[in-house]
Amino acid sequence: MKSKQQVESAAIVLECRDHGESDLIVTFFCEHHGRLTGIAKGAKRSKKRFVNKLEIFSSLRILHSTPQNNRLVFIAEADLLNGFLTLRENISCYTTANVIREFILLATKEIEGDDELYPLLIWAYHSLNTGHASLPVLILFLIRFYAIIGYGPQLEICHQCRQQIHMDRSYSFNISTGGIHCNRCDGTGAKPQIQLSKGTLKTLTAVLNQPLNRLHRLQFSETSQKEALFFLHSYGRQLFQREIISWAFLVDERKH
Image 1 (cartoon, rainbow, N blue to C red):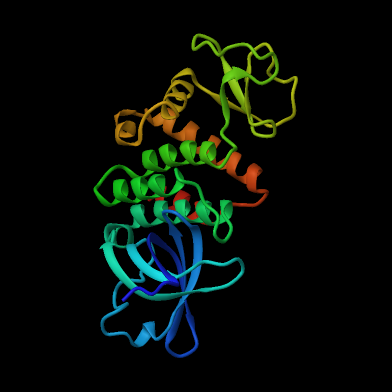
Image 2 (image 1 turned 60 degrees about the vertical axis):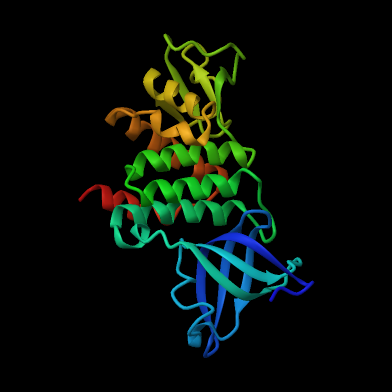
C-alpha cells in the first residue's frame, strides 16, 4: 500500500547491480523524475515483488520513496509493463539498445530529465522490440535526442554565412561548431568537416519535424544510413568529449 512518502513512476531500467547479499541498486529513467537510482531491498531473494522484473531495458511501474538529491530512493514494489524481451535476446537489438542506454546515462544526472526524453526512449525500445530495423531506429533516436537535450545539430541554415540551406547544393557538417557549412563556406571554420549528401541532409531535417508515431515513414538509403551513423557518432564523441563505448560493439555487430 502506498504511503504519503511514496510515489508511483513509469520507468525503464538502465542499470542493475548487486548490493550486499540480497539487495540490488537499480538506475531507472522515469517519466516525470528523469534519471533515478534506488535500492530494492531483498530483491535477489524476492519471490513476488521483484522476480524477473528488474532486468535491463524493462518497462515498469515502480512504487518508490520521494526522490531527493544525492540519495538513493527506496524501491518498494515493481510491476512489469513490458519486458522488451527481444532487446535482450536479439544481438542486433541488444547492441543498439545498449548504445541508446549509454547516451541517456551520459546526458542526464540524478533526478534530471525532460518530458520529451522518456517518450522517445519508450518509442525506441518499442520499435526495436517489434521488429523495426535497428540502425534506422538508432539514427532516428539520436537526431531527436540531441535536439531534446539542447544540442540539436543546426541543419537548416549555414553556420558561417547564415543562409538558408538549399537541397540542390553541397554541404558539410562541422562537429566543432555543431552546424552545417555550405560549399562556399566549407573550410573557413574549425575542422573536422563531415560531408553529408543531399538525401541524408533532407531525411535528417525531416526527422525533427515529424511526430514520433510517423518517424518510421522516413527511409534511409544504404549510403544515407552510413553517412548518418558516422555523423551522429562523431558528433556524440565531440559533444560528450569521450568515446561512446558501446558503439564499438555496434560496429562489430554490423560486420557479421
